[in-house]
Length: 280
Ligand SMILES: O=C(O)CCC(=O)C(=O)O
Ligand SMILES: [Fe+2]
Image (cartoon, rainbow, N blue to C red):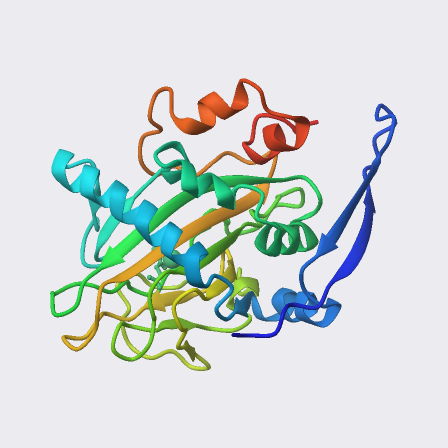
């Protein structure tokens, strides 16, 4: 059990003269030092943020979707060796318990501290790998591969956050996460594809089940494979971005999914979180 996170209130307001009340306070579930560290390093770890019944509930929800999609062949196997494992997409549309994560303040408030008050959830996916099978790792990569060279004067760099929620241990047996601190700012460097070796300054994150690594979308990272001594390794990837950005490209949104139904009676904040408001 880790100590509860420090908190502070961020008094945002929107410079928008059309709003009767432009204030957007955020109670940030982190200290100002942790937020500064996230900006500098490109990641922030929350050990065992999910525990007990809450963790079991997310595992059960994921297992239920895996059971359906493995049967219907809906799940996406890793595209190639570079992204091993089983990928599941649009999870908030597929199981109601995942909607707990839509406005989950311990993560959302930190996303708002980093990205601004107007944040949407860009997607909830999962990656599941198993012990003793080949190709259960990822190559070194970063998610926002959109930066032109040269960078034009009005270029708006994509700033996103992915909260990697580990439902099982990510340790030496199950495969830790490797990151290169500060690499989210190395926007003038190429990262070659298909790299699996050690990189200078890499850090190994060995995380107990229920832990979260919040990562900038341009952070260089790689998942190590499960070993034969490991267990199933289930990971949720909860993506955040500004409300005006497009959502994740992966998978096919189910027609009449749970978020579509939620939108029918959603309040303003939920509409923003689901990415249908907050453009102008
Ligand atoms: O499994 C992990 O630890 C990270 C997975 C990952 O980087 C991805 O799916 O993009
Ligand atoms: Fe990744």
